Image 1: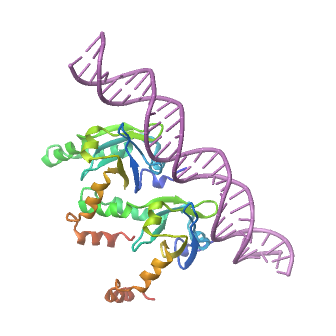
Image 2 (image 1 turned 180 degrees about the horizontal axis):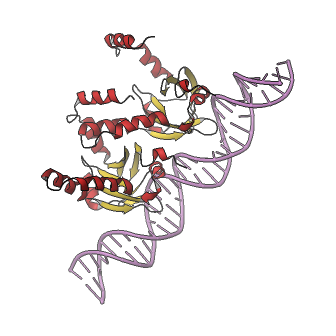
Image 3 (image 1 turned 30 degrees about the vertical axis):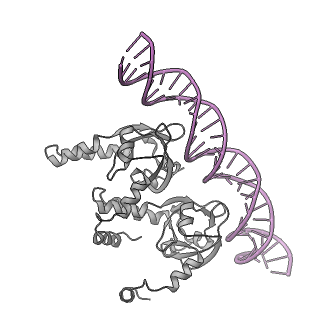
Length: 156
Length: 156
DNA sequence: GAATATTACCCACTATTACCCACAATATTA
DNA sequence: TAATATTGTGGGTAATAGTGGGTAATATTC
């Protein structure tokens, strides 16, 4: 039995392949820490930097709640809400543990046969390996000083 | 019964071997000081300088808590979270007290049959002996001033 | 409504992992 | 010192995981 403490908490990088039908396996390690009330259901949507974000149903619901509290009067908020929900799609995994990705999302993330699936705490990310490596090595967006501050607060 | 004060606190260096299935024994001395709530579970991940870091579940949990407080909206935070969690993997030790290392981590640390397992306070480190010796004798990375500062803070 | 594409639901095969049991070497206890 | 328990290491086997594909049901298009 899986510990409560690790539920819906994902980390690690895995290499998987998409088949001709657009299906990808959800890594077994991730399926094992899903809380039961997710009911095999994920929400897939556009992530930042050309990846696909995969949220367990329960986690997604919390996000929606948060969004609904944002006032729709502010243009910023409206934009953020639209951006987050517009490309979202609900999927269930099959007997073999695979979900089917939508064509628009596959295209958005530029996915080929091989993909990386990485755990990002409350969600998963699906990447074209090349894209991830590029984003990873490109630290022009990253402020080294802030990183250093973060590292001081969180003892590794 | 083990004293609270020594729980999840590791010291010393041991020599062990990895078998053909990628399993390594967790030294008995280390298993004995694990707090029960770890439930035989570790998180293994990439360490600095080509070693593998092995965190008891409870220790890791504190790190994750810190990370969860960071918003994913900031690129800096996303980068830091991904960097920290990307190569992590949850493992349990078996009846014989062994954990199974993942292929990517074995490769990263350049592990052969023989390894050193050393206690590093809140975590363990698994090294290829050659790599450790090299890192150990090469102190060009060490900033003497920082060492001096550390020595002032921590009475040895 | 017919033709075509898409999806849901099976089944099958292979590689990997989890779960045993075994045993020698070392440590502990009587 | 003899007996017993623990530790480190190896290996066999059943179960699981990852991947591919067939086909019937459903949806879409003309």
